[in-house]
Amino acid sequence: MKKNSLLEAFNIERKETKVNSINDYEIFPDKKLLDELRTKIIENLIDKKIPEEKQLNQFINDEIDSTIEGYDLSNLERSHLYNLIDNEIQGYGPLTELLEDKNITEIMVNGPDEIFIEIDGQIVKDESISFINEEHIIRTIQRLIGPLGRTIDANNPMVDSRLQDGSRINAVIPPLSTKGPVITIRKFKSEMTTIEDFLRIGSLTPYMATFLDAAVRGKCNIIICGGTGSGKTTLLNILSGFISQDERIITIEDAAELHLNQNHVISLETRVTNYDNEGEITIRDLVINSLRMRPDRIIVGEVRGKEAFDMLQAMNTGHEGSMTTLHANGPKDALNRLETMVLMSGLDIPVKAIREYIVNAIDLIINIDRMSDGKRKITSITELSGMKEEEILLKEIFAFKQVGLTEKKEVDGEYILYNDEYPSVYNKIASKGITELDSMFEKN
Image 1 (cartoon, rainbow, N blue to C red):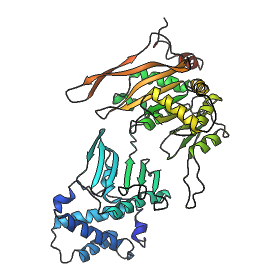
Image 2: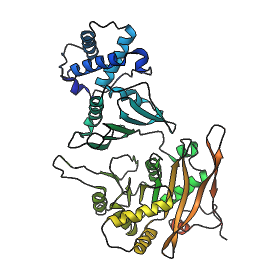
Image 3: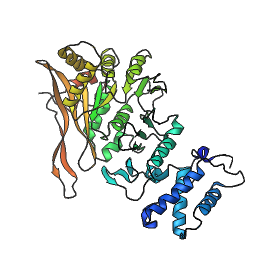
Image 4: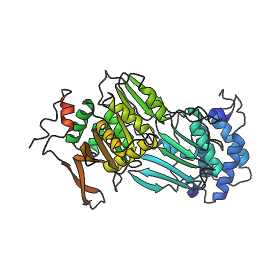
């Protein structure tokens, strides 16, 4: 092994997966003993040179031998201890198996003994693993973000970035977090990449899929709204797949999560400040700059501030078919948030003018929810159909109506298509030569 220290070995690609599904404390009932051994071994190994003539596993075994001398450990305890240390060196400590488990969609670390995971939309506490202490959590954060060129310390106590597999990591440490270091990892689910995947799990109907395909190809400007973890970015990624190969697409995100397969995609990512609090590049900076890059479409991962005005301006000035997401509890809430964001831009614009600007810019609002059973559903597709007495008029085209819960506590309901008349966006879609919606709606 040519690596000369374990710090350098942290980035070694793991060639084996040692699954550790057994509770640490089922093997080591004495938590104090386990933490004492882990601490000694990890701290001894961190900066120690690895002799070139030794294999990593032999080196770890030798260190374990010297540390546990005088302790009466069984073979099972020793093997379990080895796996824990191996995960520290070649993986990501206690999070290693959680990151590898495809059934887990989110990992939340609130403290050394407070690790929560989301499986099938349900959040549960994982009692099988723990960190030694808060320093151990911070060391794991640094291990995760080091390959990304990011750092976290007292001067930069917050990081929001993506891991190499596309998962998103957010970490906050004191003094911003009064509870201690906190980690949230939303894992990238590569299997949810097409509209067929959404159809398979019942997130929408075939009619809705056909409509959204036509709306994207027909260059409707679309906002996707929903709560945290509802699937907004996943849906945005799927809808982006309907864009034709001959269009120039610019994506703008804090942490690149979109994975477009078109031929002509430019991905832009924000930049945080450096140690001197300089050099920040915001979403708004990138949206403004993208207008000079001759885009056919602009896709913003999420708007949440002043950039909303610039995004609306882009939609109003010939960049049809642009899309973005925002946190909101429904279409009306989404419009209220947009108004607030535009006002944040510092422009002295009457509310009526802002609403007219929004109506002229946005064609559709898609709301996606995480239901009480953990499943994601598109609960409404709504169009902006004009204004009346300074209020924006909304008209639902599709909606999910919940009627209750099944015996298995799954959400029970039905999708409704309001097809008594053509929606206002029909003419825009039809003008692009798209006729799939003709049989879906009937004029009065």
